[in-house]
Length: 303
Image 1 (cartoon, helix red, strand yellow):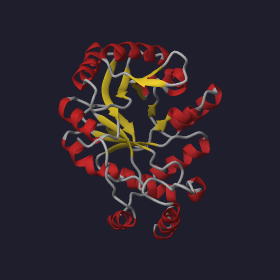
Image 2: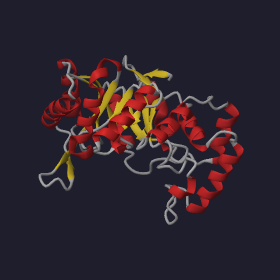
Image 3: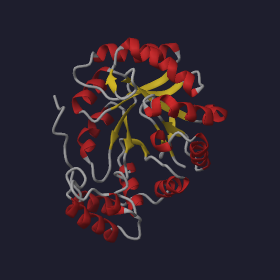
Image 4: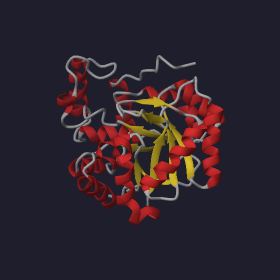
């Protein structure tokens, strides 16, 4: 499995990571998938304190404890469950972050977190306070590096300018190319994209239209648009499989540090790994893909 250095950190992460949100709460089944990921050469595991009320962190931490020094564990903070556990609010305050990290460390059964990510962000946040909290945690050795998980251009610009983030997690795929507008800015600041959703909720897989919404399509694509596009992608990029084309497209951008498709089965995990290990797309293939798909831009949260 090829690895890439994440931003200006010394974290060497596998090109494909395991997005752990879809693992579920069955510890035995989840551990089987995590161990299969390790067997495939994956060393990057991404979770969040929000997932399953922290249970996801517990499973990830317990399963990876014996190989802790060989893996990169990333988790997230900022979404705070309410007392009734039926919803959550946003809290990027220094006090909350510094308390939440202790809970995550305990659940993960580790002394440090490799990559601690702000799980969102708005332009109304006290960004300086939030950055200060992450910097303090670095100094204390509780986290090695930090990043954000956000698709909001106004938030990304502020963190790129004011902080030492090494990564921005965002949805990025052939069907959602909006992040490409901001990738030059990230590259200038030596910040890598961690691309979630590279298969576009399964639409860019062999299941294709089975995963598409007949009424709403997918983002800027109607259901009819998707029918035409998916058939064209499969035909004109043959003999590549669709998920191979999708993952290789995302990996082709130099701003991308890793892709993290979720996997709820070993079969799905291995399929994603095969796609990651495939031959990179040629310039001709990349040109064709950009011609067939829409670039798009984020209309909201720009300033």
